[in-house]
Amino acid sequence: GASMIRFDSAGAIVEARSILTGTKYNCSGGRSPSDTWLSCEEIDRGQVWECDPTGVTTAVARPAMGRFQHEAAATDYWRKVIYMTEDEPDGALYRFTPTNWPDLSAGRLDLLVDVGDGTVDWAEVPDPAPLYVGTRTRYQVPNTKVFNGGEGICVDSRGCLFFTTKGDNRVWAFDPDDRRLEIIYDAPTAPLPKNLSGVDNLTVHGNGILYVAEDGGNMQVVALGAAQEDIAVIQVTGVTSSDITGPAFSPDGTRFYFSSQRNPGRTYEVTGPWP
Image 1: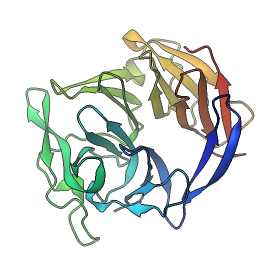
Image 2 (image 1 turned 90 degrees about the horizontal axis):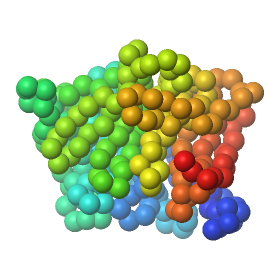
Image 3 (image 1 turned 45 degrees about the horizontal axis):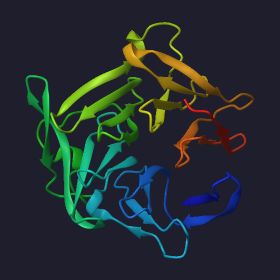
Image 4 (image 1 turned 90 degrees about the vertical axis):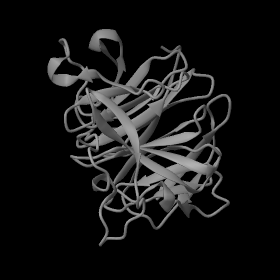
C-alpha cells in the first residue's frame, strides 16, 4: 500500500491517511501529470497504481505502463512522458507516452536500446502487460540497454533525466534531446572520501543540485557535484538495517523531507536554507 502526509505552507502536519491498500511490495513511485501519486510494485509483473493523494477516490492499476518489477517513476511535463526504472540485475529503463495526456489508461511503452557506437534510442515494447506465461517486457526487444538494479529517478527543470543503479553503485544522466547517456557517479572510480554508497532514491532541487539517498551505506543523503564530488549533507544515526527513502523538497525549496524505512520507521523534515 501507500500513505500520504499533508503539510501546510509553514510545514505543520494537516492530515495523514492511507491512499492505497491490497498491493504488494510497493517501493518508490512518483508524481503523475494529473498531480496524483504513482505507486510502483516491486514484484515480478508488478504494476503502477495511480492514487488520489486525498484518499477520496480508489486507486487504479495502470497496466499500460507495463507489468514488470517496478521501482520508481518520474514525469517529464515538457515532453509529456513518464520514465520508469526496473529493479532487476538486467533491468531496463522505460518511457511511457500516454495516448491522451494526462490520462494514463492507454499509451505506448518503450524501453532504451543500444544502437551501436555508444548511442541509445527508444524501441516499443510489443506486449507491455504480459501475463505470467508471457515474455517479460525487458526481453521482448533486441539490444535492450541493461541497467544493474534500477532505483530512484527524477527529471530536472531542463528535462534532463537522472537515475541510480544499485548493483554497480552508479548515478546516470540522460539527455532525451540528443539521447546522450552518461555515468555521473561511479563508486569504484569516485575520488576519496567516497561518501556515497548504496545509491537509491534521489531528487533534484530547483537550483539543479542532485541529492542522492542511501539504502544502507552510511545512512546519508549526499549532494552530488561535478567530477563525482559527493558531499554528505544528512546522516541518520542510531538505526540498523534501514534505508533512506522518499527524498523530496517542499514547493518553495526550503524544507527537505525523507523517511527512514525501519527500526523504527520515521519521516523527517529538515529546514533550509538549501543548498
